[in-house]
Structure formats: C-alpha cells, structure tokens
Amino acid sequence: MKVHLKTDVICTLFLVIILCLLIYLHFDVLSPRERQEKYTFGPLTNIRISSTEAVKTIALEDDISVTQNEHRCEEKDQVVDKSLPSASATTVTPPSSFNFHQYLLDKDKRHFQLLINQPRKCRKASNDPFLLIAIKSVLEDFERREVVRKTWGKEGQINGLEVRCIFLLAVPKNQTALPLWRDLAHYESETYGDILLWEFLDTFFNLTLKEIHFLKWAHEFCSNVKFIFKGDADVFVNTENIINFLNSYNANEDLFVGDIILQAQPIRSKTSKYYIPEIIYGQGLYPSYAGGGGFLMSAFTMKKLFKACNEVELFPIDDVFLGMCLLRTGLKPVAHEGFRTFGIIKPSAAPHLQTYNPCFYKELMVVHSLKVAEIWLMWKLLHDPTLTCTQKEVIERPFRWKQKS
Ligand SMILES: *[C@@H]1O[C@H](CO)[C@@H](O)[C@H](O)[C@H]1NC(C)=O
Ligand SMILES: *[C@@H]1O[C@H](CO)[C@@H](O)[C@H](O)[C@H]1NC(C)=O
Image (cartoon, rainbow, N blue to C red; front, side):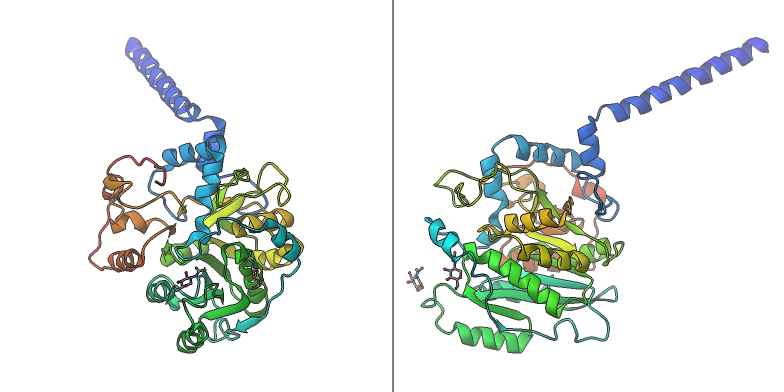
C-alpha cells in the first residue's frame, strides 16, 4: 500500500514537471519582440490597443509579423513605394517630374473654397451618426462611387447605428477629358447628397490639401459623429466588421487604427514616383503613418488632428503628412491586422489563396486595390444568406505574402 502511494505521488510530480516544461517552452519560443507584435500590435501608449478578439483575424499572425519585419529591414524604398498607393487609386497618377521648387513656393496656399457642401450630412436623422465613411475620389471615377454607394458605403443603419457616406473631390485636372464636370458634380450632389468639392486641382500631390480640408469640414459640419473611416474608393470595406470593432470603443477617447507603416525611409531616387528631395524632408525616417486604403479614428482624434495639421507644413504625400500631424498630437497610431493595404493582392498573384472566396473577406476590415466588379461581387457573396464559413475553409493552406508585381 505504502509503495503504491509513493509511485502515484512520483508519477503525478513527474507529470506536473512535464506540463510546466511544456508551458515554459510554448512561451519561450517567441522572442520578446514577436510576443509584443503578436499580442499588442505595437508599443503600448495612452491610446487604446485594439484587441485581437474585436476582429478575429484568420490565424495568419506568424506570416504577418514576418512581413512587418521585412518592411523594417529590407527594401525600405520599395516598401514606401508599395505602401503609398493611396493616391494611385486608378485615376490619379503622380507626375513623372514634380516641381518641388514650385511646391515650396505654393506651400502657404492652403485654404481653398468649398464649392459643393453637404452641411446637413450629419444632422439629418434624429440620432447622431455613428460612422462617417469619407472616401477620396476623383470626379472622373463615377463608376467607383456608384459601386461604393451600393455596397460598403451604403447609408442607413447597421445594427441600429447610423452610417453616413461622403466623397471628397476637387477640380479635375484634365478638363478637356471631362468638360461637363461641373454638371456631373452638381447632379451627383443633387441626386445622392454625398459630394464635397473643393476649389483646388485634384492631383496626386494635392491630396494633402484634401486631407486638411476634410478635417476642417468634419470639424465644422460633422463633429457630432462618433467615428470616421477615411479611405480610398478602390478598397473593399467590411462595414459590419468595422461597426462591431468600434462598438467597444469610446468616441470621446483617442483612437487611430489602420495599416500602420513604421520607420519608412523617404525615397531619394529621382526615378521613383515617391521621390522626396532633402529640401522637402531632411530627416532619415518618416513618422509612423497609416498606409493607403483606409484608417479609422474617433471624433475626438479627428478634432485633435484638425488642430495639429493646421500647425504642420504641407507635405506632398498625404499619408505621411497625416503621420506628421499624429506625431504632433503625441498619439501613436495602432496597427490592426484587419487592415490589409497591400497584403492581399490580386488572385493571380496568390492563386492558392482563393481571394475570391468570400470567407476570406469575412474576417477582414479593409482590403486594397480591387476592381469595381470585384467590390460589387464580394459584397454580394458576403451578404448571401446561404454563405457558411468554417475556420477550415479559410486557412486551407498557410498564407505567404508576396510582392506586388
Ligand atoms: C486630357 O484628356 C484628353 C481627352 O481624353 C486627352 O487627349 C489629353 O491627352 C489629356 N491631357 C492630359 C494632359 O492628360
Ligand atoms: C494644387 O492645387 C492648386 C490650386 O488649384 C494648384 O495651383 C496647384 O498647382 C496644385 N498643386 C499640385 C502639386 O498639383
């Protein structure tokens, strides 16, 4: 009897030791840095860290940390190149030779008139809007606006929360291509009530003007909104996921979430379309900024950014400019895995991924660079009542990030 008991005790002890060893190993294989990236997505600051539960990502975390490290170490020039296409939304293409001298001369001209306004955009319903979707567009891109209006930018209620949508436009650069642009803007505004149009030229390097004018407008006409999503027209946005994610946040606190690009270097090669000479920006690294595609912020942060941006000199790349404003406010932007600015690319580049499988989009918030038909189709597929997704379908094969070709 005594011997029996002893064996049992030894056995139990042995098992406990093994268990402890296993737990220890599990946590130790991750380096501290990986652990931080895996569990907090960036340095802890006064701004709330987005929780992994809020939007479950599709267990691609390991691959994501690999890519993020790549951004920092290798091919920084290319990274900036890939991460700045917010402006390249099909129709605005950067000029090959940009007159930086003229830019410096014009830099103080930063107030332009609002030609078409929607002053009641955020006042129409009895409830304050929960989410304002603000989309950068160019007047020529009528088709994109149409598809966004029908899909992820649809105004109305989601889970009882008011969603509003607005398009940010300026004067088209090539007016011979669209001689009736004034009429188009007028009738679109009349029909849909979702057009803001400012009196500067709608060019790639003027997108910063769009940024500050939008913040000014939001501050003046939409300060009662809770949250703002600002993005491009060529993205797919899972509006329901965004609403669910935001539901756990307080609009009276700071929140700035997106696909955050850390420590990008200014491109000094004159052939690049993102070339920035040292007279424009002399420092070695850009501040953290949200890559194109889109980002989310609270109304509280919008008001802070509006003030901060007024004190920052214009910078030709709008994403980076906003990063400079953020730096001025002292806020640290939060990266969220649901934002894929340049991660998920065209199905041809990642055929095994089934990027047309709606289940793949179900867990994401923003996906970049889609064609008009793809946006429409994905929305329809995602809202098909017969759609059933199991985790297994989503992670059929391990995901590998590929370069945009
Ligand atoms: C403007 O558009 C017209 C008509 O589409 C085209 O022929 C012309 O080359 C364009 N001009 C510029 C500067 O792009
Ligand atoms: C921005 O817009 C202003 C006003 O229309 C124009 O004078 C200027 O040339 C534009 N700047 C760029 C870089 O396109």
